[in-house]
Image (tube, rainbow, N blue to C red):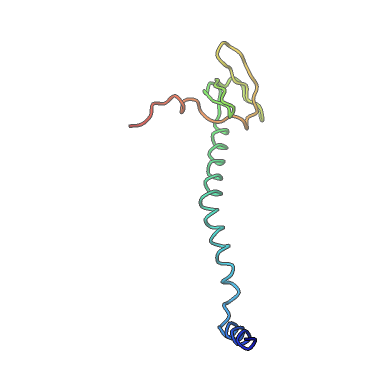
Length: 110
């Protein structure tokens, strides 16, 4: 019985060893999938948002990331003043501007 275990152990080590780089292939594949499904789209969204904030100007209808709609009345380096209905003005961080409110009210394409 003991002889049988030893001979099977020798048989397992007799197979040719695979190269070391083969064990990294699954990790590389997982990283590529993560990159194309998560990292790349997020970076694209961030670039589009940064471009929108650069083009932001007085009179634009915008919404904040918390869901407030208003019209831009003032722009500073980091702060945007938006006017809400009724003439109320509110200062918001520029980074919290979500996008153009015109896109929300646009009719859906058929």
